[in-house]
Image 1 (cartoon, one colour):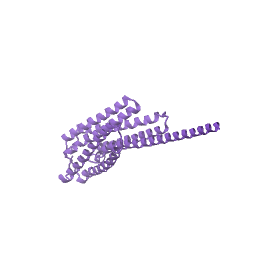
Image 2: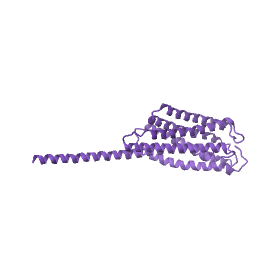
Image 3: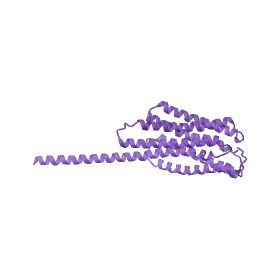
Image 4: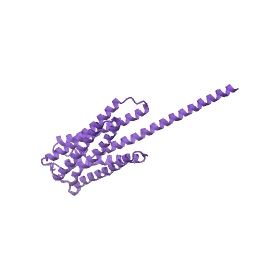
Amino acid sequence: MSFSTTAEKIFGPLLIGVFFNAILFGVLAVQAHLYFNWNRSGERWTRYLIIVLLALETLNTGVDFAIIYEGLFKKLGQPSLDIPLLAANPVLISSISTLVQIYYAWRIRILTRSNVLAGFIFVLALISFASSICGTVFTALHPNWGDGFDQNLLRSLITWLTTSALCDVVIAIAMIFFLTTHKEDSMGVTKCVVNKIIILTIQTGVLTSVAAVADILTFTLIKESTIQFIWDFSISKLYTNSLLSMLNAREEWSKKLEARNDVESISNVSFAHVDGLADYSEEKSRQY
């Protein structure tokens, strides 16, 4: 990409995006620390998923720092985005978002028992991932994509971002539908916990879809600009942080639910003991 503009206008948005990426990576490290310090013997495969996501996020952060380092220091801020590592950005981001979206599809399948809905989310996630691979290939083949967009590159990047945003919207709508149609839960405390988890999932879908839409709009509407990288560099961290936030919140609310159930059990035992004492006193009075 070659612009008749300054290095500040080209690399400024990239640098801001890297800063956001680093900040969210720090938040992710805290979230992961909390997650792995809780006992989840029944969710071993979920732990493996988080480990894979952490590895991908670490690689993503390293690549983003390498991109800005090469542009500002190795090439001395030359107004060009002919940086080989930039091609890895779409597939890295999409691999993270796809894993998170497939996880949500699985959770929605459990909640709604709808194979069609979960399958639709799964297909959207795979289309997004396939489009990101195409975007990576075309970016590598046409590094100077600012001098007249390669149409294949343009279509692949727009398809990637659009399907990813659509997938997030479908996830949010599915959770809203489940929240509004399933009110027959007999346990009020359990229902409250489930509702909080669902609301948090809805917020996740809204947040990531807004970021993806902002990426699409800035990429397609603002020509000869790199402002889209402000969201693009940090969007994967939104997915992973949102997933870990939901998992940690679910664990916290589950512990509160278990604690409340334990208190109620203790209270019931206590009342039974008092009744037993009353029966015993009544029986003694009859004997006399």
